[in-house]
Length: 565
Image 1 (cartoon, rainbow, N blue to C red):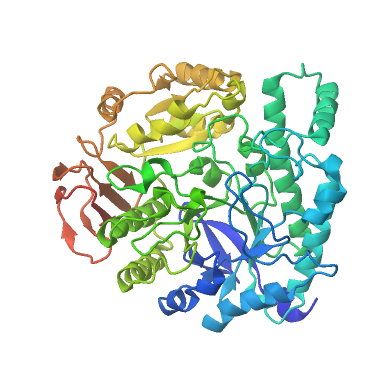
Image 2: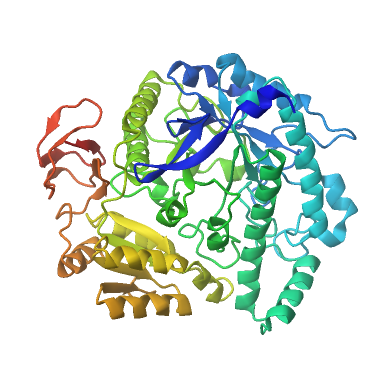
């Protein structure tokens, strides 16, 4: 390994109460750029507004990334030929470096195996559900093949002229690169049945369906951790490693593979986790555009969270004529509405202490000076905010047991409790933090110390972990609200009333999205009107510095981000 490759380092450190990326010992604003259609890239636009951090797609095999929707093929596969063709990656990273020679890049490495390998190893594939003949995550042979390819790829990068530009790796795999199973049933195959039988014998399990679906999530999480460990070893632990995973609130059904986040959070080789911003409600303002992950558990374990802001704009067009990609979800709003969506995503990032990247999926989505100005202003605000107190000021803790979904029968979703409840929570006027039940001990110490005044317990199905949460709350005389399928239709007003009964004064008495940390407050409203903010802090506009009163006249679907003075 050459000296120039050894010099670059990256890590995640807790700074002013929140995780932050450091490169070569210096803190980096948590905003980046990526596009799938690199021939339509806007790398130069983002470089011009000061963006230095980029991610980019890398494919080990040229295959659709979405078997259910038959996503159009894009990106050549490095390992599709007899000898790996690394010139594919050289050419793609070269496009970024042409726009910004000092760019920092963390590639999104799609580690899915080639069709040739899959066809030659039928026993290692899924054999049940939506599709067969693609990887079963329980396959050890598949893991070894992925490690072989990953090892060759990283070795090439470390010996390339651009080695110092690569500051980490995102390990992507499975359906849509997000570690969903290809069969849409949890990654069921000969190898998963064999391995589950071994687990049942070892731990004297009954072999129930619930246990099997817990196992399938655990296997997916375990594979992510194994590949992260392998990557850390290859890079001598100098660079950050992360992955998509842990969509607890967005995928409330047992087959998603995403309900072993607790395992990933305890993995020392994972530095960051990521997910798209929630797709619930087509991302319109006047309601919360929330996170898929319980990010306060992510932060509790010292991990950085990246929100993927694949924000559709007035410039977004259909990428192809595939019926799955010509539905309204692929189109954006007018420019003014889109700017408010982008402001909300920025506000959530700065108040919740995480990072993000702008996902310009087909290219050109942000090719408007108004969008680029907001991205530039946002980067500058994030830069100025480094070191400001960033801990949450939320008085309410929301807790969920990710394993509860495994109790749900086939075809039954925990949507009302695990996902849709975010609508009411988001409009309650009370900021909240979200945790896994597996982090009960740490959360309990916080409520005993006065950090939280009440709890909302999300219970798609009863579990021992949630029973322990209830026992702890009752023992400590902390008020809690159980949300089950029976009362999941609770309104924002009813949540506000519960909070008042617990001694919590809502930040506003009307339906509104509010975020708050030690340094910032954000409000976005569903209806025109006057909104009174109940805060002792003096406020000023976070962008202009103009002083704001606590009484705000706001327009529907519009928001305001304010700095506490």
